[in-house]
Image (cartoon, rainbow, N blue to C red; front, side, top):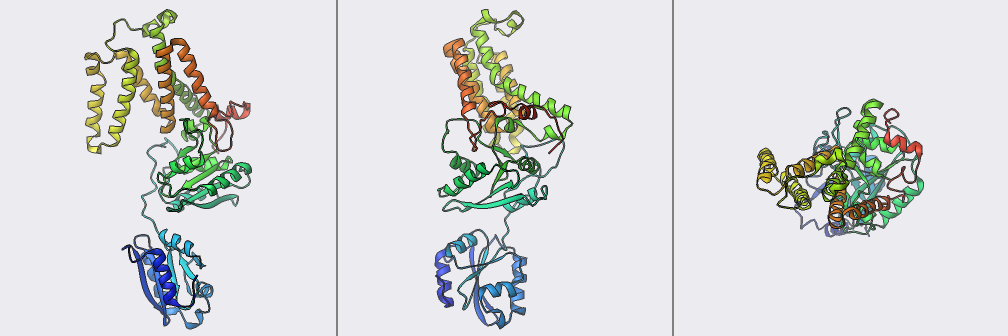
Length: 465
């Protein structure tokens, strides 16, 4: 592809990069020891101070004897750590568009790549979603290299492996697969490697979600999360040391943990930052509250439709006054209304969040009851469900439980007791058939049962990993 003619090489790279059409793709003409040269880079992704020092060294110290070849020049005259020599035009274009500088020099048939890139990023502050009462306060950011460094800081072992991939024919998104060589499931790793290399998409438009959908092409109808997301480096490091595989995607401030069961998704870092008794209580309380969020409103509706079956000590849950709107439609209305308030809060400026919350609370409480739209009991149970949903940080799992709850409500309203039983069975089937990438059960270690692992998931029985 490249020749010893400098002008030809310059034209080849300029045409491939279309540098004349993009103002931020800069071509800097140079003269190094009486030889013509050019530096291609992206303005805004370049470490200016480092590049200036490299150019200063070129101007002052490079001699004619350094020009034996591109490789010899890189070894003897480039005062920088991350340097590569290549003649692959596709690689050159991809690297330059990623922020790497490309240096071409007269009479050389190869291009010298200088990794002097830097990406704009925010500080590694504590994540908003994965907060803990104890533990470290750092979190992942949108830069892949910084995220891998946060993991390296916690695991100083030669078995820690960080393998790089590039996905997307247009975006060329950088992906890192991280695992412990001596602990990882080799079959799972080989399966993941095969799937990542087989992905054929233009770009990962929605970042990690696009990657997950490319990896899991089947069972799209199953709402339960296929992977666990975490923004905490300590949680990620713990999962790696347990033999799991972690996927980091550039521009994503979180990690994907594989394989995943529902017990993994329900775990939190606080479970291991407290003593065993406290950690066990937190785990059991979270499991109990999770079950309550799914069943409380369907069971209440079932009791209202079958008052004769309701035990005497639970008869206080029954409604004495007739309702303008059936209880079923009250609950569905509030399910949608709460989501509407949540979406409104996400799109509301911070200065208006408090007034919006006050207006929403008034609209869904006193005024709603007085106008006859909903009963006080319906508001109470939906408030319990809404607050209980925040006991676990995974929003995707929260919406999965919401869909299960709505299915229970709909079938209970239509088919009464048999509808509740059918919906319950359907939800169990969805849980059992939601396969992980390793094809293991989503309910493992409960199904298939593994007593030792099940106790470890339910109880906090040992020190932090």
